[in-house]
Length: 115
Image (cartoon, rainbow, N blue to C red; front, side):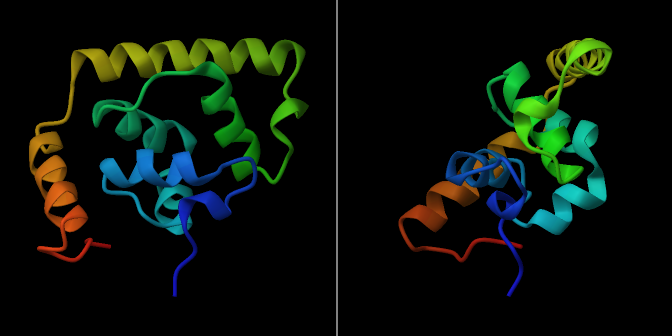
């Protein structure tokens, strides 16, 4: 069995749902993409941008508590997330509708969730 996204430090069940809409259902998928690419995908598939959520992901992938981010590091992450948000707004996913349909079909038991 693979670990869910929420097994990454600082993330919980809401992260599982948000990343699943983007086709990311395992912690390894998020780790393989890295924080920036995974968060971009999350936003492109309808996730709501939230700075604390982004830096909690970054800190979690580093094995650090979410509130460990301060000073220049926090300022740098703010700059990075602003660029990611702009990129997501400019290039929403073309696959969002398909994944929304798959999620709805999975919810009513018509198909199994893809991994």
